[in-house]
Image 1 (tube, rainbow, N blue to C red):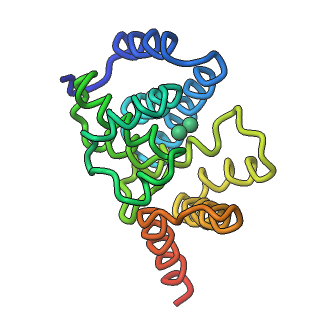
Image 2 (cartoon, rainbow, N blue to C red; image 1 turned 90 degrees about the vertical axis):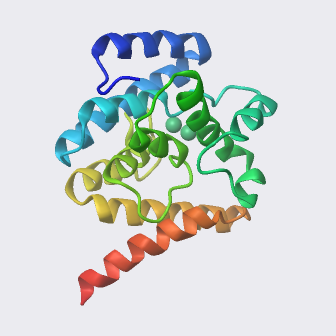
Length: 199
Ligand SMILES: [Fe+2]
Ligand SMILES: [Fe+2]
């Protein structure tokens, strides 16, 4: 489809989101899009594509699980065993397939950013990192460290990713959730970067 994402296309996608999401999740999506744009401007990524990824990342979140599973069957990369066993991550994987097949979006970076926005992966692109962090620091987030992550993401994106992944791993361990191998890979990736800095 498009080589760039015009504001007209953005308006069409917002109308689509309005039909598919609750008011609360639409607000979240708009906030993530705004944060993604700000991070893209800070870290020299394509601000329009960042905005689009932020806008659409949760587009499948309110679908019933059987429909999410149906979309997931066609996702690229396909879901691993642990992802199939972890329903809260399904919506990102389903959204990759929805964006590519139903909306005709071909930008791999955006597709991967949406696909991995919940689990992360080792070797994420700049745009993938931006969507991952934008989801954590959007204006509607009120958890204790939200402001810390807002500042850190603008100052040191690698460190922000490391701390975010550390938090994600820690939460999974505390809650007794499965560790998704993609998430462990992502954690190890940023841990190596942090260790490298100490040398
Ligand atoms: Fe999500
Ligand atoms: Fe989200």
